[in-house]
Length: 322
Ligand SMILES: C[S@@+](CC[C@H](N)C(=O)[O-])C[C@H]1O[C@@H](n2cnc3c(N)ncnc32)[C@H](O)[C@@H]1O
Image 1 (cartoon, protein in one colour):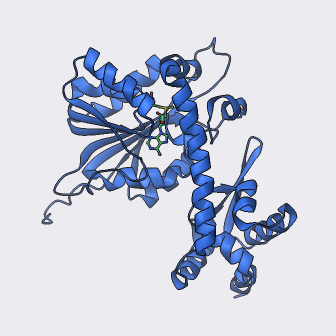
Image 2 (cartoon, rainbow, N blue to C red):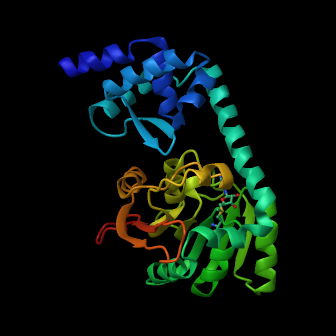
């Protein structure tokens, strides 16, 4: 019982409750939380420390940034969920400031892609062994037929071009009109009539939920999630539009410490661990079916490992009516 008393004590303060509710909505840094809560850094840090010690939130350091998020498993997660059930959500003013923080961040990334759209092909190959990654993606995805493919955060459409011969229909969505303009040009030049791109946000995909009656066979996130403030939500949204037995593939970096990728290339996260991705998959109802690490070239200055994770939504159970 002592553990529960300790947790309730930690949560039993208006600022800490606000922090807990906010961190159930997004993974945030201390400076972002200070901006939202409007209190001094020492006060916010003290509250965060108490919530961490009680197991209600988790802290993780990545390079020079420290992120906080609500605990997503165990007793801390159960109590957080119970408290959130009793309340309508974070106070309206906190939600507004959270939205402003997210918009500011998304605008910074959008400005980066606007400025670098024409250079993206070159930039992409700077940090990853492209040919090997593309071979691995093809190997994993073409093992089964693809009727409908969604490339989330398609950018300049390279993944559509790669996978077009293997899919009946492929759609790319992206929030950057500048990246999409180049993708459209690529589709026209390559004569790829089964592909199309649209402006759209990966957090709110402009498609109905998938399932037994329809949806995408494949959803792909290629080098997208490390730009997002809530990759778990993007993965859950991708899983929402999968058909039964559909597959979701993530190609992104394994954990690294190249801090300059934040400053010079607009990255938010410095790669992802297997454990973190498995947690997103579990929350989204996906089963991890394959994982593969692709080593950098031996002459590569930056030793970045690209990781592929493949998840699958549950297939129809034999003998059970759909
Ligand atoms: C690094 S690029 C990768 C593009 C492409 N997948 C590739 O590998 O060439 C990341 C892309 O994600 C897009 N993006 C960022 N946030 C997004 C969001 N919330 N919804 C859709 N696209 C987003 C950016 O505009 C950018 O084009």
